[in-house]
Length: 163
Image (tube, rainbow, N blue to C red; front, top):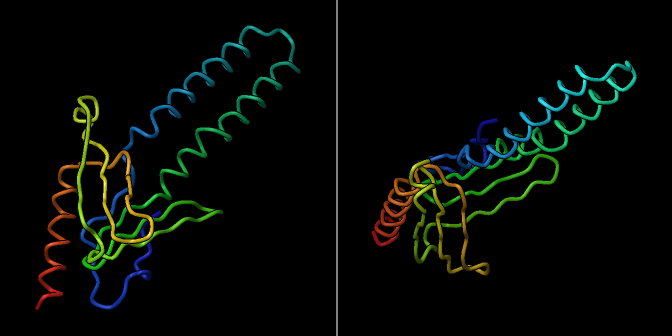
């Protein structure tokens, strides 16, 4: 699911559009493998047909509840950096959104540990002059590059406002 371009205002362009890093899906993937392996073992080693159907039904239910929900949550979470603002969107049925104008951003920092550096992700921290203050975006892919892009966008916005 792509980011809806109709949310942009005139003369606004997308500089960077991201989903959270794929590491958010690792737990759901491992859970899926475990459930599938347990279901196969249960079906193979159970002599009663009705129990096999129950095992398959429970496995299907578990796969729908956790991994599919995580996948949909990941796919519908957007971090969008434009020439005018940052747009944060998430959810399908219950939607959450937040827009931060670039001229309200006071500070941008990032952090990532060794494991996150190996995976190429990290946490982006944005200090805003708004009501909510600090925004913490976890599992941002290429966090250093994203930090640099955001810093550049803020600087360009400052120079455009000053002109």
